[in-house]
Amino acid sequence: MHRVRDRLVCQRTSLINQVRGLLAEYGIVLAKGPSRLAAEAPAAVADALLSELARELFADLFDQLHDLEERIRALDARLVAICRENPASRRLASLPGVGPVVATALLASIDDGRHFRSGRELAAWIGLVPRQHTTGGKVKLGGIGRQANHYLRRQMIHGARAVAFRIAGHDDLRSRWLQALVTRRGFNRAVVALANKTARIAWVLLTRQEVYRAA
Image 1 (cartoon, rainbow, N blue to C red):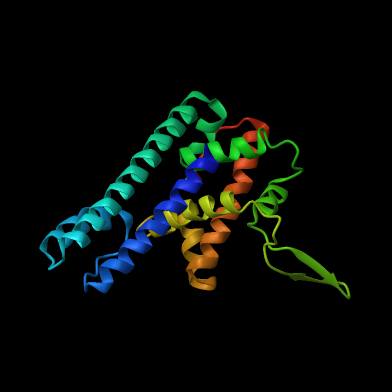
Image 2 (cartoon, rainbow, N blue to C red):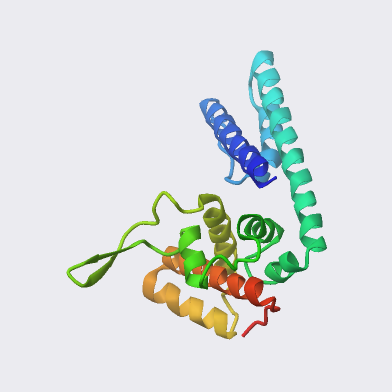
């Protein structure tokens, strides 16, 4: 299901980019975001000076986009149902930045997580910890490598980014840690660090069958 969903999301992104490019050729520039495009594009096309053929082509593209949105929503609903039925995925979904998509993707990929020796090993497998190289007794960090689980990494970073956008005004221990990290290292690095931390906590929840408790 996750592979099918990922393919549909990629198709939606490609279709949206194509629609934006074609609209721009007619001088129609819309705000970013799939929901904004779906809401504003039909009205913008209706008001523009276009030929009937162009209107028909855009209508067909909008129908394709609507179909992809419906199929993605249907899969999301199935994933929510699966997440609610499984105790392990419910524990994972209680983590900030982990919703039904990430929770079920983690379970589908690592089961109970016991074949990883630590949370750090899981985070490294996902691609949230840089590869280490030792030269002359010094450890150097490289990129994430081709062996990383790029789908899980992308989903966990999306979740961490959503959490990072909401930290303003929060005074809990996790928010203060993240705010300080953003100040020291920048927003993007802080987001990856948060996703790394989330993966390690997820490993603990799975292997020890514990419930997440916010600090």
